[in-house]
Amino acid sequence: MSEIQKLDRRHVWHPFTQHATERDPVVVTRAKGASLFDENGNELLDMISSWWTCIHGHAHPELVEALHSQAETLEHVMFAGFTHPPAANLSHALSQRLPGDLNRVFFSDNGSSAVEVALKIAYQYHRNKGDNVRTSFIAFDGGYHGDTLGAMSLGRGSSFFTLYEGLMCDVHTIPYAPIWDGSNDIDQRETEALAAFANTLDAQGANAAALIIEPMMQGASGFRFSRAAFVKKLSEMAREAGLLVVYDEVATGFGRTGALFACEKIGFVPDIICLSKGLTAGMLPMAVTVARDQVFEIFLSQSFDTALAHGHTFTANPLACAVALKSLELFEGENTLEKIAHIETRHREQVTALLDHPRAERPRTLGPVLAFELTGSEGHYKTDDGERLRDWYLNNGLNIRPLGPTVYLMPPYCITDDELTRAYAGMFEGLNTL
Ligand SMILES: Cc1ncc(COP(=O)(O)O)c(C=O)c1O
Image (cartoon, rainbow, N blue to C red; front, side, top):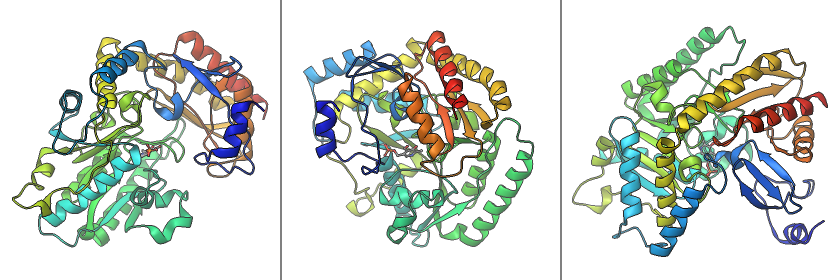
């Protein structure tokens, strides 16, 4: 065990970790492009972009330069009563790229907080309009929106959080309709899910403040993809019933469905959108909750009572804003959407082999994401097969970290063809060891 591992073992409490049984963590000392390097110089291809954040690759020189020059200029200033160029410019740039009138940007520090802010905006939106009845929320079965109390409540249908039921707010869950290669009953499952949603709206719609969903891709609950038209229909039904529609694009934003935002593919402008992860390309923690103009306007009056009473110390940190702005520019400067399309093509070439593999089922791709289930592997966040595979991959130069029975690849967009070839070969070799 290295000195760092000893210190870590003695003092650090890691996320989502049972310290009594977990292997010692890999000590990463540097990263470049699509690769992480451990303290002994071993390379690990980062096939899950460090929890899906690092979209352009590690230590991208233009992001490093944006961070450096902003640090020399203004590292931080409180954000009530003050603003600064990186925040105003980033808000403008995001509004320009988001569809419709999603023009009002509220800053926070992580995906869960972005979701909490969305919940509070939706709840207060109806209060400000004089409606005190709409106090609950509707979310998908199996959804994951983060680990804070409101976000956990939305994820109550994922079984991640059963222990905390007593702390949760009022959320009704509705069926999801996942799609994969070879699924032939998707039309019927979508029809059933929409009928169930219609029933929920009949029973609970008048009491619900908002529908909150991960559009087109449920991430943490196993990379379950859905069709755009299905999400659009649900969104229209919710709006028709007087609910605000919130898209949690913390995972899907910044190219992860193939478009810059999933809502573009769906062709629907949500009332509120939550973004984080890829927002700063993995360099700093930041999130935004973006609202349509007409939502923001409901918070305007001569009284503080209708204002959104929410804020964090590091709201709109200038360093994070400067990096996020540069990251958006890279999408155009480096033709990032074309790179994503190329990764999708390469991923699709693996699906046939996966369909034939005895230990893989339900292979699927969406933009730069490739996912499948391990046949015969039951369980949730941790499964024996998943753990064995994770360790095999780590020992063989790959950061691929199955989520329970789901194996997925979500590489940085800078990944080269050779690196992809290496990753696929390793992925199958690992599968063959099971
Ligand atoms: C869709 C979605 N929403 C919210 C979150 C929570 O984000 P964070 O971990 O930054 O709090 C996640 C994290 O995986 C997510 O995938």
